[in-house]
Length: 477
Image 1 (cartoon, rainbow, N blue to C red):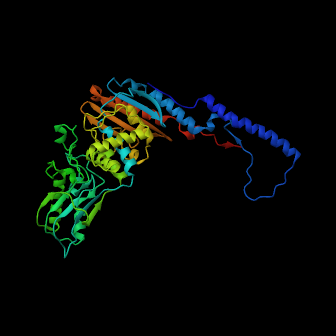
Image 2: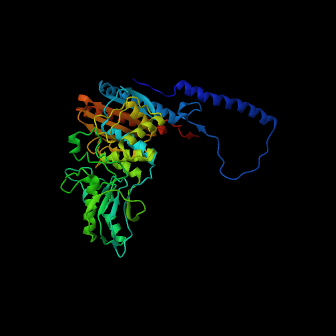
């Protein structure tokens, strides 16, 4: 299926002719009045502009350069996309658009497994619901210290910060090729409690993850995902993705976070009399120290460029909490689908079971993803947060290194067994090219050939004339 929307030459000629005819009539009337009623004008100072002859005629279509450039680029992209669209089989889908005009699509209503392209939707809704400046705060709360001593328990209350980490965890390692880069320092949080004058806690250090529910794994995550570093447990209080220095992943993120923070405090001379535990802090306790995350716009960049699964899952629960006061996966996913409908995005066939795309139970269509991309832009926090071609530390580090694509193509990848997806933007001149390619089945195994065809299509868009090449020629005479 393909659709091409754009102004025709005849329409542009008609639009240009109307004001031109009107101007001609006005000129005749004005000229006759000038002969009958001479006008005396006061002298002025400044530069006198002599009449000039434009090299481009008044009625030339070159006087609508931006529209014509977009129209010509769309024609170029449509022609170049033929091989790409021809390579999409019956189990996959694809769509290409220019300047929010859908040019061509294959199987647009086919429900497919999106893998991590689902994060595009989560990011767009999170941005709309929470706002780009939203932050996530982790706090120590307890009784006010007396002489440096807190009598009773101190609670470490999670605020939904997905990148609370120790310094060691931000380093590249064989098992972590894309570590977090927008980090909330766990060491700095421990330092803040020390700076508040706390030297001893007579009770326990208790982790509080009650901002969200107790579900740590979406039901669609298989055992192999849960055993992998990509599928870490979800909670409102997490440090280092619940990962130890030895690479072991704790199944209880809140308990692991409390234990990690206790070690940091003890290393700074703070004694903890009762060990660690988990629970919910009572209302009215004093805030002893806190740490705030980077704004949401930067966390979305983290989530999209490195495909951070934990961030996506925590965003789903935060959306649920913001929309319905329920920090659960089901509430968040329901809110996401509802928000898509409010936007006018097609939701037929959509089925969401997580926010990261790790579950093979997720289903959506290329029409849905394309509509979300067209609602946004390449420069908003979602578009700007996408990985770029050949960008180190991102999911596109090893792809799109050709001149014209490296650092230019902005996209979200997705990978599961027999699933390969790519969706995003390519800026050509003043136009944005939107694209979605979701391969399911055997075609996902040989995805590089399809990506090469996409590359050729995008480079053709870049080679199409820009508005400045179609603008009126400079005056002569």
